[in-house]
Amino acid sequence: MQSTFQTYLQLGFEHISDVQGYDHILFIIALCAIYRLAEWRKVAILVTAFTIGHSITLALAAMDIIPINGELIEFLIPVTIFVTAIYNVVVHRFESDDVEGTYDRRVRLNYLFALLFGLIHGMGFSNFFRSLVMPGQENSFIRQLFAFNVGVELGQLLIVALILLTSFVAFSVLQIRQRSWNLFISGAAAGISLIMALERIPW
Amino acid sequence: MGLSNSSVDLHKFHVSRCMVEYNPREQALQMSMHVFLDDLELALAERGADSLYICTKLESPDAEYYLGRYLEERVQFSIDGQPVTFTFLGKEISEDLQAVWCYLEITDLSPFREMTVTYDVLLDLYDDQKNIMHIVGPNRQEGTLLFRKGYRTESVNFK
Image 1 (cartoon, one colour):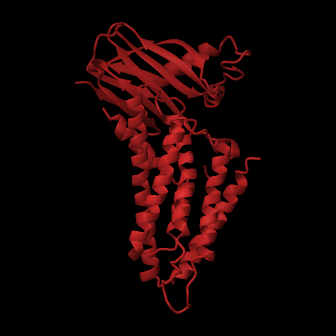
Image 2: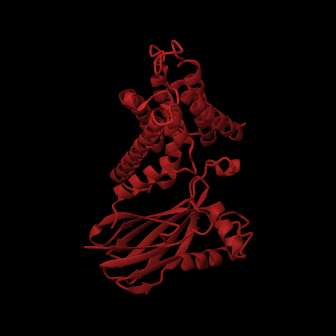
């Protein structure tokens, strides 16, 4: 019989990588828009910050320690995408036009964004997790929560890998400049997330 | 959660869950199934049983009958190769008033080795419907099955 761990891992993985509910995917796309494959270490820090953020609130909300306003969270998720996209375009500029790939790296606000916005996305995950969880003994609950979170992380890693590979193709094969790529991806993310946010205004 | 969905659909997920436990003392397989009320009423209405107002003051006297019929049709068990029927014991509204708990039981059941389950509740209503079944079998062996479109029936073996 399929173990509880496997099932909840699968549910977590499918939840984040589901193209029908692509808001989390879009957020990761926006986070990664300013990086190239060679900078994977920075991406790893960023993704870890996001993971810490969403694991905290997923656990706290799943355990009913913090209350969740579903409508508000669903609205705030596209807002996090929009802010990240705007940040990419405004803050991460070239220092000079002729140096490819040099952003102003002194500003590391995006690590903080990833952490704080992770808190919001985690509340979104918990909303879904709460509809899956089986009432019962505590150790079973922890196992379900842990497996679901691991599934989310694996899905996230897959998404990050696909994004970095796509941008690698864009830079090396299509010869797109990094700034252009950032504007293209962040612009798309900003547009989509703005519409999403407007559709989800809770008041 | 796509752009085209209505805002009503945004925060609701299409999931039903069922806890199944074999009780060796009572020689019975006991089940509690959690199904969202609005989805359930929609599914029943599509079959012609509308205005049931399940778990409200206005509940139709036929509500349990239609609900039981629906469950019998959509939830099926075969144990050690033999189809078995369950009894629909009753229902109860969930704490948050969003869902109904349905209680089912298969009685006169000796410990068994194999179980095949069809858990087809709401699977034709939503493409993203997921039904999760947590099973505690004879010998306390535990596991969780996931049912969805294309995976309506699953089998488990107990050691």
